[in-house]
Amino acid sequence: MLGLGVDRLQADINRLLASLFHQGVLDEQFLQLQQLQDETSPNFVYDVINIYFDESEKLLRNLRLLLMDREFSDYKKIGLHLNQLVGSSSSIGARRVRNVCVALRSASELSNRPGCLRGLEVVEHEYHYLKNMMHELFQLEQQRLLAAGVRYPM
Image 1 (cartoon, rainbow, N blue to C red):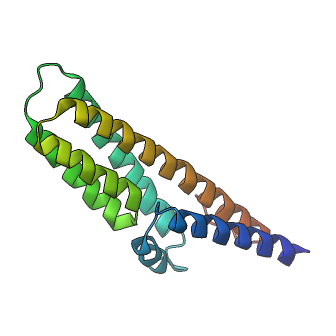
Image 2 (image 1 turned 135 degrees about the horizontal axis):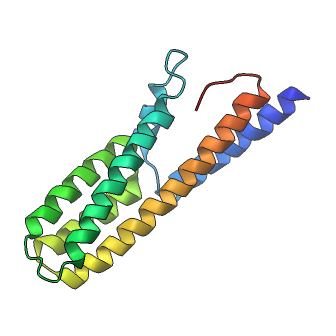
Image 3 (image 1 turned 90 degrees about the horizontal axis):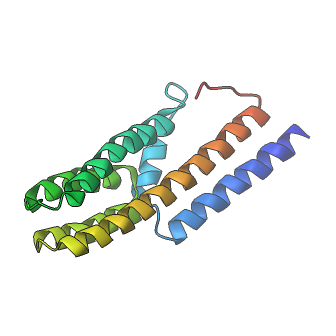
């Protein structure tokens, strides 16, 4: 009976990942990240993704603060934050977050404050969707490991 639970959970994980790839939320870079995980670093993907979320939260907060300042005019600062967010999103395979950051960067290059505010809302939406989906994925993975009788601290 133990195997059936593990198989069902693995099927759920595979369906979720297939959906995220089909939606363009993730790209092949995420698969490469997964390939770096092994028995010596069983939480590698989880750890890298959580570092990404921690750093991205700071970048998004800084972007929001910059754009909420009515006197703001240094759009190069926005570009610097976006370059970091684009790079880190690319490195974990967060395709849609990366793509909407590029669109926001275009608005910032035009010094288009209303466009930047709209773009930031889209970036935040995509970021939170990714975060929720990764949380769901990690919960399924933890359940699969528990059902298989393997325990890794998370």
